[in-house]
Length: 360
Image (cartoon, rainbow, N blue to C red; front, side):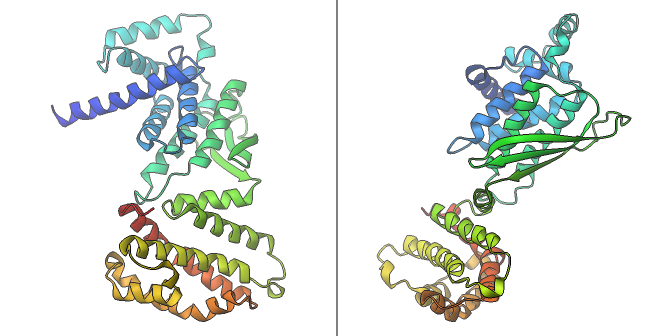
């Protein structure tokens, strides 16, 4: 079997699984036409991204199919896909042509296709999902399933409602709320004289009414393998800071600084306890944690940053002691701790380490 044949086989294995799932779960008949094909794939994706462990390979593959049907002539792509699916991956060109002619001869065929305005939106949303995986820097990073859910809910709503072919869309504004739930959407269009072209970009912007959940989703995407309690703690601190944007000099940031110290201590301690099963958790205080990582060759893949991380953690000991005693912590000191936690790369290393070593 050549690589080309192998790639083709793997592609149709994934596609067959997606279409079988569409057939079982989706209220839309994907064999009716391009419009239903996209709707059934959107429904499949919406179901998949809400699973406890989504199948990234199937998500990306389904999104690529949605992108492809907008990049090519939609009816032609549709029947290539459907006929090949029915023939277990074998391309039958004469049958494809016959099906295309039969479809286009029907009086009501237009209700089963999407117009150019809808085509641009479908394409932009599908390409966005594909790029989520293409640009993902590391395996231990997570895709933004919450954002996908919101946009997929919007697309189903758009295609079920229908959108006029002209004027062409320019910006899609989506409002979401708790639970990554779409609340409403609106579209800003181009001038009517702008003609359709596939290279036109539609900007999809999502504004969340739930800042805390939005922060949690962004943190989960980047630090997918730290403890869920740590994500909650970080999101809480960032949400509280957002609400205290005025008169920072009058506010004590003790509680918010404590959030960041708590997360760093908990996550570093979890790695020590994973490596040293007989260690006493009560003895793993701040200074002992720093000593352990200074002594042990745990951060060998980040050796250049190790000294900087441990020196900064050691320098923070004085601030941490004042936080522990409830003393006033100004914004400047809190900001130092926050920036180190989120920008130094230490939390990224922790998430990667826990991913690679299956640390619970």
